[in-house]
Length: 96
Image (cartoon, rainbow, N blue to C red; front, side, top):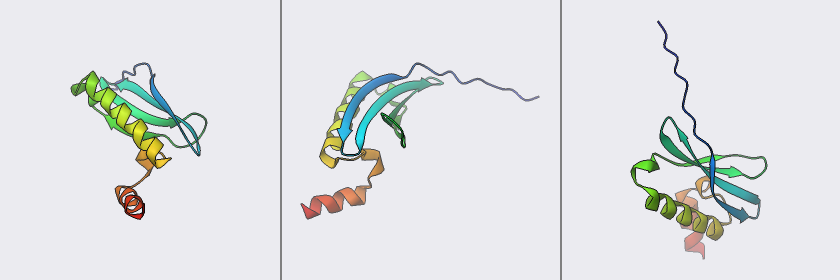
């Protein structure tokens, strides 16, 4: 007997926005089966990135800190933080 479960999907909530040279991006939070997922999505068309999941265990202060740090990184990089590699960021810092 096969048991089918329907995922519980919560409302998607906007957590922040940022502008980079390639366009505007939006950070959303959403619960899926009770687990909070933070995604970085283009305002119009393009690739979305998973930023974090399971953050509900760390509380609201952790969520606020993550969003603030992520937005700062996006402004500094002028890019989607999840799209850049640690090595590329390190090399960029060395060059500056």
